[in-house]
Amino acid sequence: MSYGFDDGLPLEPEPATAPLPIVDTPDEVPLKKRVDELENLFDGYMSVLSTMQTQMETLAEGAPTPAVPSASDDDDRGEESEYAAYCWRYASPAQKKRLWVQLREWVDWANGVLCSNKWQYIRPCWFRHPAAVEELTALWAAWEAAYRTGEAEFTDAAAYFHDRFHTVVHRLWDGEFSECIRGHQEPEFDPDLRLTGNDFDQFIQQH
Image (cartoon, rainbow, N blue to C red; front, side, top):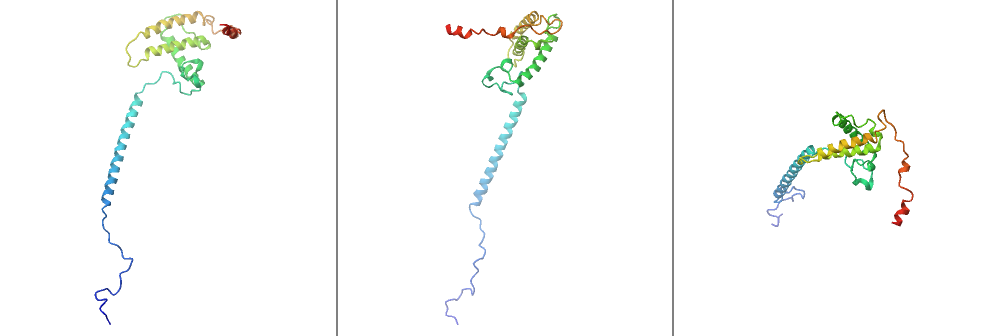
């Protein structure tokens, strides 16, 4: 028996778990656009980084090789690091080893080229004479300064070096090497006798 209240209604209700219709939301289009923009931006950054890396490699390949090791290499000199890397007094042990090798190579070259027609030359025992080591190091540094100029204009530094070179060699021959004509002879002197006198402190207090 019907009272007319349910006319046109379904006999059973639709289940509550019925799937909802799928529709495109307006936010999906802008989101995809933003992703595309981020991808393009990322590609641009990668291109810039690649270009910078190429430029850095090019600069590194064209960088000049230093004549002597940098003062920062194996540096254990502390506050004295402002001294040149070829300063024997403040060179680190590692720097001294490299200096010996480099100085020997230069001395052998100088003996063969610059002293080829001279009876006075750098004695083979030069490395056993501290004063000779210092003077030959100074000559080596002068040679580097004169000839390792890069694109600098011509100067008279080379002429100065050659003038000083033979003067120093003659002085070493008459001084440090004078007893080593027939082989190395250790210098006979007491280093303590060459130290500043014990009355130095008293003297400077009075003056």
